[in-house]
Amino acid sequence: MARLLLLSLSPIASDPRVMRQYEALSDAHEVHVMGFGKCPPGVRHFTPVDQPHAGRTVLLRNALRLAFRRYSAYYWKHPQIQALEKAAAQVPAGFDLVLANDVMALPMALRLAGNAPVWLDAHEYAPREFEDLWAWRMLLGPFFDATCRDALPRVARMSTVCAGIAREYERCYGVPVSVMPNCPEPQALPVQPTRADRIRLIHHGAAIASRKIEVMIDLMDHLDDRFSLDLMLMEQDPAYLDTLKQRAARHARIRFIPPVPMRDIAAHTNGYDVGLFLLPPTNFNYLHALPNKFFEFMQARLAIAIGPSREMQALVTELGCGVVSSSFDAADLAAHLSRLTAQDIDAMKRASDAASQRFNAAVSRQWLRNEVGSLLASRVHTVR
Image 1 (tube, rainbow, N blue to C red):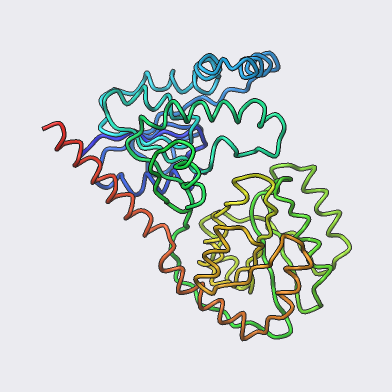
Image 2: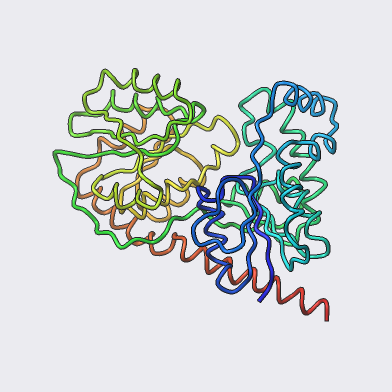
């Protein structure tokens, strides 16, 4: 049994990707977890990291360090990193592997690892994550680029959520990157038949302005009375959510419904017909988006309707589980949806049903177990 450190600057209990890593590795190894929030249920070794709230003075100081390219000072004096360092002092050293989530955690992970290997699960493409924002392009983007250039050559393994992001890391930093998609738990749900006179669309996720959810509301301007749309949104930006509700008020066929826990999403949405996600590519990561909800649509046995988002488009085309518009214009996707018959949608639902056996958390967990086992075995062989 190896001793592993699982590190993430996120609220661990509500971070499904990190929790899946723990579940994949804790049966065979002693896994210590560090992150924000309370100890998640079932986690045996957990060290909480205080989540500091930076005041204006700290924010200004950090901005100046970024502006003058004082990246080392920015990182090691960042309140979250200092809180992480303080928490790490409570954990006995001597890990066989450190698994770090996101590039921000990587320099600290390398320090804590000592001579042990570090696996970075980068999730998204850090240098261009919010490149649609001026402050990101000028300040944080260059910081993450510099961090990647310095730290990525020192990781033993690296993974991310999709092939396009993996290729960009490989192209820019010359490191091999594996793909571990964001897949939910497998669920045995039926394929519900579609009514010809009532086609129910569902979109779920966070109400974030950069996602342009209003475009999906405008989609209903171009669809006939067979179609209805339910929006199940988490309130991250109350003002933006209010704007969406005002925009949708003209449509009797649009409803806002309360969100449910992530583990319940597939079962809760199984009675819908089409999972909808029209995501204009406002930044690099949105261009290459392959999110949880895409695979939750599969687990719910829904047809999938998207714009030409590269990663989602490749899978929808390969699997035959939905429709892809040629642009991110609402009228374009509406035209594709309007041509569908109930029989077409049922065939796409069956394709999602088949795909759900391939894209789920059980498959991802087994892959991670095998890869970590191989990495640990190769280290033992090298030491001997």
